[in-house]
Image (cartoon, rainbow, N blue to C red; front, side, top):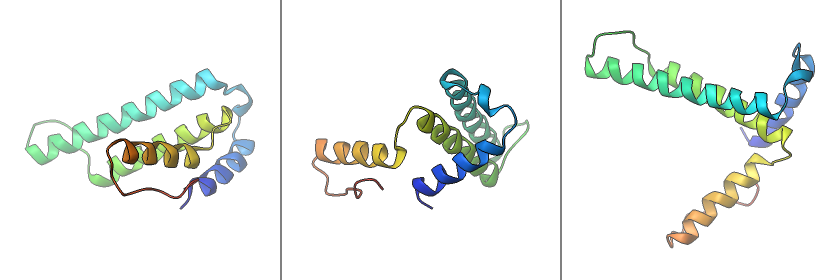
Length: 110
């Protein structure tokens, strides 16, 4: 899947989503923060399970699902701000590779 596929699907689905007209940049930013917090919580519960610590646990699918939710929310925020997330990721990845003299790069707009 490419970021552009996610963006198209997000735009289409948000037209169907009740109350979407109330979701401004502040709402989207809080949504992103909440979703990444859920990634951290799922990861904590995953580690709890792998380390034998008492309490509720999660599995890799739970962690993956939360990561997916976080990326979806981040794309919704990026769309609202007019940011091409694929291009931004490629630009930043490549800048870090250049900074540390590494050969691995992404195609522009990946």
